[in-house]
Amino acid sequence: MRKHILVAEDNEDMAELYCLQLEALGYDVTVVRNGSKVLEVAPLLLPDLVIMDLLMPIMDGLTAVRQMRENPATRNIPILAATAKAMEGDQEKCLAAGCDGYIAKPFTLRDLGLAIAALLKRPTGQPN
Image 1 (spheres, helix red, strand yellow):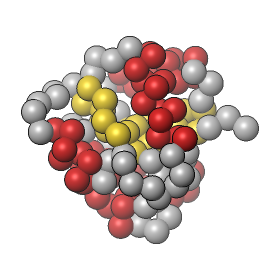
Image 2: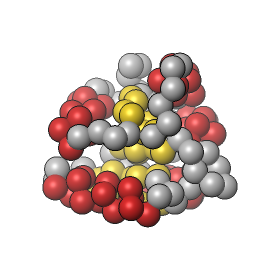
Image 3: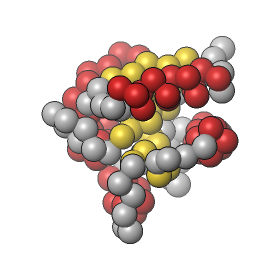
Image 4: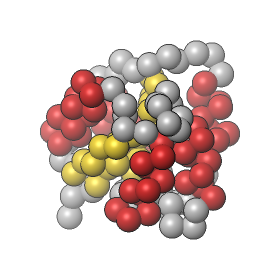
């Protein structure tokens, strides 16, 4: 069975790129446009992984991550933080908020694939 990835990305072009890249890697993909939608959709879909953009309208990615970790239905879903505005200390902030991995945009298809594969291989609920 194919793994399902939930992508939280407000930029339409980037969301489309994620879909193309992830489908090319063999994943099923659902895209939402803000952190609030992640909190609504993730407990219903129970995806194998969430890719979370950090800068989104309505609710930013880190707020959504913290709330996912408080919900028993979503607390063990691996979360890969993705951001275009990578600054020193961002990775640490993401991991402290509850993300399992971090990738800075732009990234290659290979980098994305490796980051996802590393998170999907880790047993559920295991620390980084």
